[in-house]
Length: 447
Image 1 (cartoon, rainbow, N blue to C red):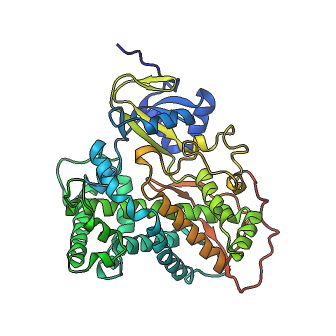
Image 2: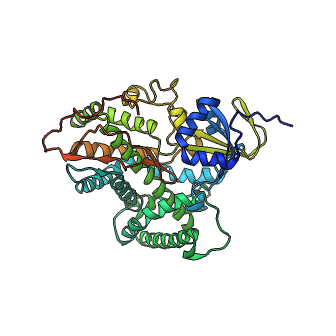
Image 3: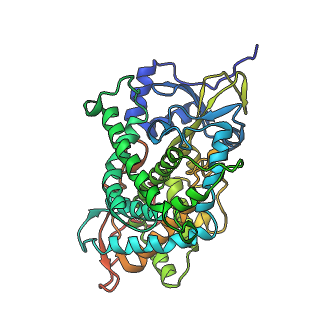
């Protein structure tokens, strides 16, 4: 019989630990790490008995473990995205589906999407008011949604207008439902899940119409993701079913929309409080450079990770993870903000300093906003490119006014953690008189 070896942790009842996790998620995790070390045991609703880790070697071991040892965290977004989504698939089925979805989001195809993103950004920035504060998160949501819709489906039309209207509230609603029990009886619009399933049927009907339209066109002439999916084939030569296409498109639309927009809102929030870095970025844009901007995107994701926990479910007894031996059924959670705050990896970790990444790319098991291993975010390259284009366009066309206001607090939107005030900004067009930088905090101030 395998001896179980677990890290220390609190002994309070599950509901007490759950209440603490809900009311003080970030502060509570940091307190437990300070008390118990870089790994600790918890027992909370939804995940049950779990181990939280924040050591890079153990994170690497977890992310590279085979599907016979650990699988995707349960419950996950597959419950709302559909049985054919990457979140729901496991083992060989996950590998096969992921292989089909890699080409649209890598290499030369990314370049084709840059123009779409810049057009959507310019269109949205034209609506921003001058000289008065406003939340940028709604705008970032519109930019990323419109961009991913066009990248996925190609030209605009009535179906895209319908999706543009229905997806934002549906995605927000679904992210909250993802951790709720699924009822055995469909009560229609009288229950949260019933309303969600009604919207899902509406979405499936829209995708069916778009597939029917595409069937009458020359798919070789199209660059959008839907066209590529319709042409893709598994190793045995079979195509993806309509249900699989609908599930994967929904996965791309949701995963490629809210998290990227939230990171962009955090970027605005961070840059307004670090005017020296902001000035450097503007000068770099004017000189047609991008090294510091790329480093800034990495640092925003390090200091303000939109997703704070990810993990795996242990499938076998006696799973060895570094110092620990875990039983079957346990959950292993990776504390993203915990490792991103590790002083041994990122000196002066609480400071916002993009220069730390100018000459060094982050290690993919120390900087993990996109996850890791076989389940690393498929759209990571697309999201990074999108954030780069949006920030470049914003800094090129607008003057972002610095501020001395306190940092915006973290606010949970279900899955993503957003700035509580929506990443408030005050802007002017670049042809307006310059704004004096004297009222803001210095770069590198602790957050």
